[in-house]
Length: 114
Image 1 (tube, rainbow, N blue to C red):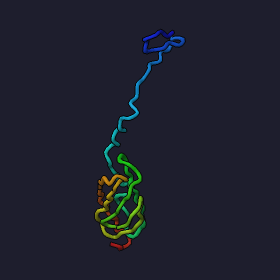
Image 2 (tube, rainbow, N blue to C red; image 1 turned 90 degrees about the horizontal axis):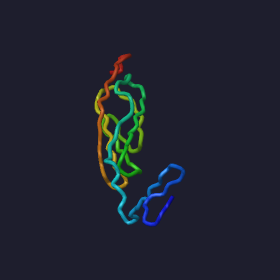
Image 3 (cartoon, rainbow, N blue to C red; image 1 turned 90 degrees about the vertical axis):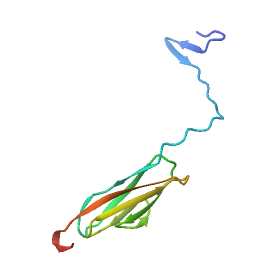
Image 4 (cartoon, one colour; image 1 turned 60 degrees about the horizontal axis):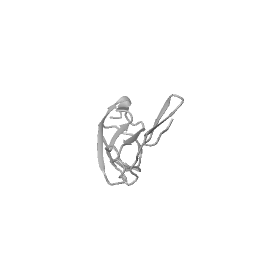
């Protein structure tokens, strides 16, 4: 039941609460930008492997710049190596916020490729 001045309405035992929203309030900020790299951290020498940058938070779309053992631009990169080392993903979101991450990739030297 509803009465004048009452802020709630009752329907068959359920109570609905009136809510007030400020349509002029700015939206909340996005969560902080972070990134992970998905891909193997130990590889066989000379075998091509694929790595993906996985950004979260911030504001999409994202741009990923790769460096270290391989270089390029885009959400994933494929390469082979015979030497261990670092692979780095530098990610920038649509508002210009930047973050980066790196992983170390070790190499199994089968077949004398190292």
